[in-house]
Length: 414
Image 1 (cartoon, rainbow, N blue to C red):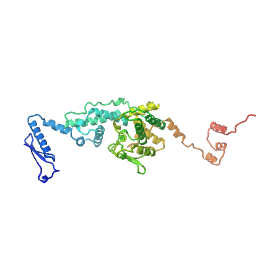
Image 2 (cartoon, rainbow, N blue to C red):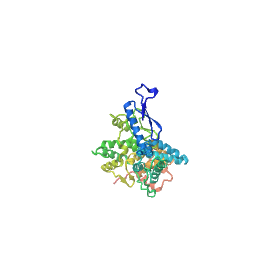
Image 3 (spheres, helix red, strand yellow):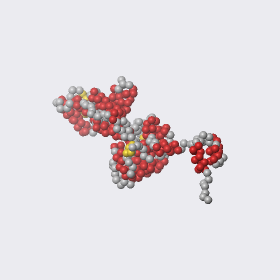
Image 4 (spheres, rainbow, N blue to C red):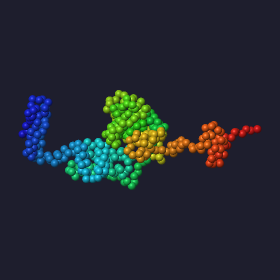
């Protein structure tokens, strides 16, 4: 028979809970925390007694009950145990495995072991592959790490079966990744305008909201998940210069990032956050939207091809790729672009920089033409072209003749 009581130090205190003492199915004395209300505690005690009776009669399997408790426990404690189990491996293997497993778990938002599902992992990895332009080999590495975690859960009797079993690997030999291309400023402006004036919803967002998402993506270079995390409190509008912050839990490299804001974006954001609570998301549910569909439809309205021989212009390309390419086109050094893009390796920044023939021709045209010292001196003294040409040794005869012909006075008819 279960009994309820308050501990000696708690007697007479209404805000202190009762304690339940009962005997379990193995004859062992157990204690359970009750409620501050005596009647509720008596009901809980009766429930515990009934469960003991069912266990004695074999109607509740203690092993299954234990398993259920494990499945409902926080996944973090199992991740830490899995990390410890890798101690005999190389430091690099241990680090890479845990980084990949944690990224999968956090990306799929698995909070308990019961939530783990292979289909969700594959769906998230496909989105991750599209967003980050990872290859089939890297995709398979993530699957392998997640599968290793699932097998370990079975080996340690934390789960009866691997919930991630059956996830198919990609054929790395036939990697069909699409190239991406950056949009030019005028193309991007047309994309924004096409969205704003469309009058239709795509992926749950009206035209104005899509235009805002495109603009902030282009002006910050943030990834979709990072954009989804933005709230009014992410912006430090009164700082000098104004900045925005991406918290570590939302950043790709799990590090808190603070970035300067484009002056035009400061003006736009002031209007966007007006009336929002500090923790209201600017773009609700963006992390789960098919953003490539948004861009594809709005590019079509703008008369811009989604795919060309140069590559695809999906959401990641239209925003992040265009941002990084635009930085370089505007005169930023590759190192400055790397820091703003928050890349660990400058080679990754180079992959995001799409410099075409027109860009190369423009850069080449800006290269100063080397004049011979004597020619420079002649020009400084306002000499005519004949004098400059005469002081320019090594100038090809054909070119010399063309220059002199251009400088000769025009003939007149008699």
